[in-house]
Amino acid sequence: MSWYFGDPCYVIRDDDWMDFCDLLHAADIKDDCPNPVCITWRGVPLEVWSCGGDGCWSFDFNSEGPEHGSSFGVDAGIFCAMPASILDVPLEDITGGRIEAMIFRDEPQCLVEDGVVFLNGTHDDSSMACDICNRWCNAWSMQSCGCGYSFCYNCECRCGW
Ligand SMILES: [Zn+2]
Ligand SMILES: [Zn+2]
Image (cartoon, rainbow, N blue to C red; front, side, top):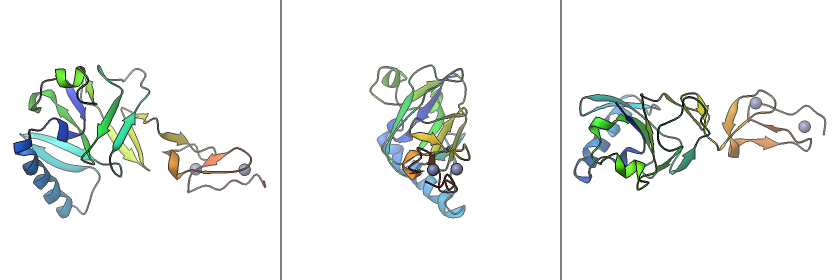
């Protein structure tokens, strides 16, 4: 079965979108704003992630990449993996480029950490590795030193520049 990965607002019909949001809201309140929010939609458990807003996240995949696409757009502030069987739009809307999202052969594994989106272990292209601790971090959260190092908020350059 194919899996969609992207913003659920593009693939849920308008008439059902408020129901989807109500589920998210209820789970959010119950579990104190978790990331992901876990809900069940049309009988399928979903992990719904956010990464601080809307935008576009792109990836440079190697072996664990999708069958279609290498980026996803976000308009509703959230994104998740959904089996193709519960989408309200045909897969051609994604493969044809009307919707910016990805299609995977198997369920992709997502993780959001320090403002970085990981999909099947691949970090999104807007992230950078800290030159000191090597962790992947969101590029806009990095500081830089005159010596040329870029480093995360947990680290400090000790070069003496
Ligand atoms: Zn660091
Ligand atoms: Zn330095």
